[in-house]
Image 1 (cartoon, rainbow, N blue to C red):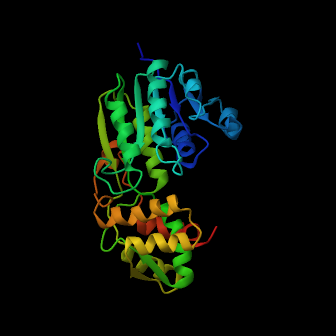
Image 2 (tube, rainbow, N blue to C red; image 1 turned 90 degrees about the vertical axis):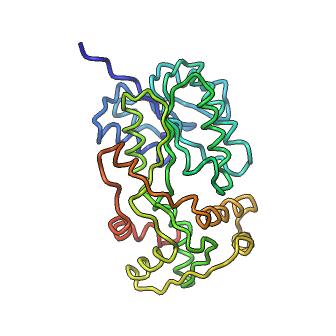
Image 3 (cartoon, helix red, strand yellow; image 1 turned 60 degrees about the horizontal axis):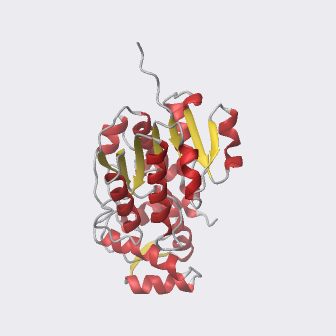
Length: 300
């Protein structure tokens, strides 16, 4: 007798990562739409998924009392970390409420999107992720933590301005980042969610190679035909520069912490966890960058 398929739930399904996870479940893994639940603060944005037969529900992490009902009936839940970065402490409170709601809803297993070295990272919001990991580990749930490396797509925050001036001001020194495509991370999350795994595990999901800012700059310069040199600055100079460009102080500190973390080696670890999980090799930078050059070098 066949074991019935679990019902899978993806939070933040109107976001770029969550939406890509649902698409991988449907199209890559051929998971039946009637066994999928997609949630969002804005369920109207999920009309395309509803049209494919996915159950769509509203789930607002700022209204924790509503979450248990939103999560009802799920056997496995993907908790995509929220984007609440402007109010320190808010994101961790949201995540803790979601973990508690999963317990109340009787969801047995949660998959969570964290970041590398959450326990030691210099990234300013690493404590949000570590706190969520601890909330899972002290709950009665079983869990999979995906410590996701930096997206290739994050280069879009830096490269347009750098190319315009010909200089990439960086406080990352010779530190490296094991970049990976967001779509690869979505595939990894879909596989982890759809798997029958019920043991507690932490995976660090990275690309196959780590790159310094100078490595990236050299490739971008070659592909665009424009000069791009990396200029070393201090973290304090970076914060000052970001504020001068209109970044709110909280956000300037967040972005500067990325370079501090890179310089410290927090984002440079390369693992084969992606390959072990998916059976695929992650997309290589030298394949991804030419195919997505306009996305990361054009100001939006």
